[in-house]
Length: 118
Picture 1 (cartoon, helix red, strand yellow):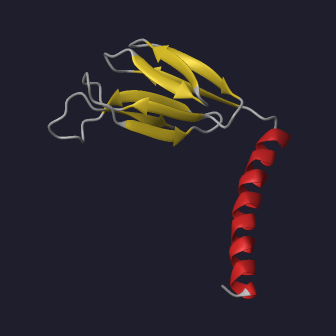
Picture 2 (cartoon, rainbow, N blue to C red):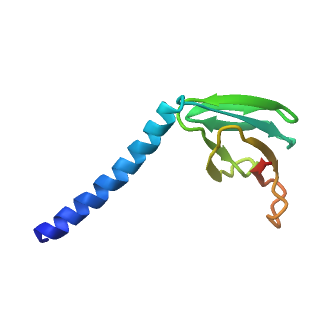
């Protein structure tokens, strides 16, 4: 590999790292946390993680979260026992999100998803 190729590769990697660090710095400068609301409109106890911390949300409940590490959620979208299908989203500050049955998944009545409500 030539010096130019090596320099271009390193520059590209450094730019990606810089953008990631810049995004984290912007969150820190702006207060470093995000506040959002999640409702559970399913019939399931929903286990989910926000920024790595585990929560269990009961049916028909509504919680307000304060996330200090970006507001990333991970949850199992298939409520059948023995099946796991994780979904991940980055939740926005001030957003209202709702766990609901996913009616678009034909043949799987146990499928849920997290929807953003305006």
